[in-house]
Each structure stands twice: as C-alpha cells, then as structure tokens.
Image (cartoon, rainbow, N blue to C red):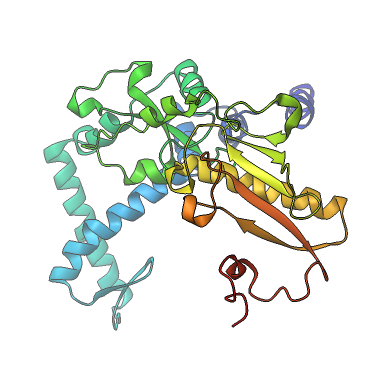
Length: 328
C-alpha cells in the first residue's frame, strides 16, 4: 500500500513532464508487475511517435505497394487505404498465405540480419544528446527551418544537414531543426542547409525606420515579427505587422516569417475584436513595388479594422485600389 500511494502521489501531484516518456515507462513497469525490458519501454514510445508512422506510410506507397500491385494487380489503393479486389479467401487459405509470408520474412532476416535491414534509419537519425538538441531548437527559435511551423503546432526533430551516410559529423554546425513532415520528406542523400536562412534573420538596414522601431512603439511581437500602430491610420486600431529582418517586400519573406506574421495577424485580430465591439470585419493588405503604392521598402502588412457604414458602399473591398474597379 505504501508503494502504491507513493507512486500515485508522484503521478498525480509531482510529475513534471517535458515529454511523454515518464508515464509510458511507468505503464510498462506496472504492466510487467514491476519489471520491463528497455526494448518494451522503447516500443511503447514508438507507438506514440508519428514521425515513424509518417515515414512508413510513405515507404508503404513507394515500395511494397508499387511492387505488389505490379505483380498482383488485384491490390488497389484509395487515398491511404489498401485493399484486394474481390477478396474471397477462406480462413485456411488466409492462414496458409500468412505462414508463407512469415517464412519469407524469417529467410530474409536470417540472410541479411535485422540490424543491416534497418541500418539506413540508424544512419539517418543517430542519437543526439539532449543538450545539443536544446541548443539547436533554441537557435532555430523553436520553428522548423524549412517550412517555419512552430514547435507548439508540430513536433520538431534535430536533423543532420550533411547526413552521416555522406560523412556528416555530430557537430552543432551540422544540425538543423525540422518538423517531422519536412524531415520525413528529406532523403538520406539530401544535404540542404536550411540553417543558413536563420543567419540572415538578423539583417538590419541602417536608416530603415522599420529596422529600428522604438521598443515603446511595439504592441506585440514574436521571434520574427512585430506589431505596431499605423502612424496614419485609415481606421481606428489600424495596425502594421512587420518582419524584424530587413526585406523589401512580401515576396522576399521566408516561410518562417510568413508563419510568424500570420500568427500575429490572428492574435491581433482576436484582441481587437475583444477590445472594440464595433469592428465587424478587416482588410488585410500589402503594397509591393512603387507602382502598387509602396513608399517604405521594408515589407509590412496592413490590418485595417472595418465597421458598419465606415464607407458608403464597401462592396469590392481591396479592388478599390484601382479607380472604378471596386464595383462589379
């Protein structure tokens, strides 16, 4: 009883989690009447690891299905589902075929060795220490260095820029943070260095007013962008969302910056709707190039609150940038 209460108290009141590992290990130990192999504990982690599922879903489509459907054209695919057409085998037939498959597996594993079969996965991932992983994620500002998604929305992995299979070393300079989707799509021969993009986030231009915004003017911010009030507002609470890095226009933005700006647009919209109940809509706009009306050549996005009757006829919205084209 004493041990039970101690474990219960730890789980319910004291367990501090940075990952899923603790409860899964306890489950395996409790299921095994106080004992569990490291292999079984690792398997329990694997059952929650979607990166492995995504990886093998891709493998299923590109390898076994490709070859099986070529020789057994009754095997079909519908999105992520695979099936035999007109599958009418009885139980004995199914058991016999499963036994034949198991026999093939045993013969192949005996010939090649299980470790060699999955050696490509070991080379691709390797074991990266927690301290290195922390430094890489901190440097990446907890965003995928390929697509820019935040770690709060999708799990990030630490990836070798130059794969081990190509001689890549376990050094901080050879690691980058990728979400599990981007990492699973990156082949073992791909040495794309997304980390170089990160180095340019500190680019600032002397004399650019948006590169040198006073701190007291910033309403809110994240790692890559800020929100300020427009000095010449079209409507009350007209806001500007601005990337910290100096880039001339929207088309110069990196994907992480687009994600960061989208996040601030949504957060600002929510806050303004709570603050001002008269707001019934928004215009989101960007001027790219002098002929499009751009006067400050540092990308900035306008978030303009709209209210009922703030113009005589709002139909067409941003189409009004060209005279007489707002109505259609």
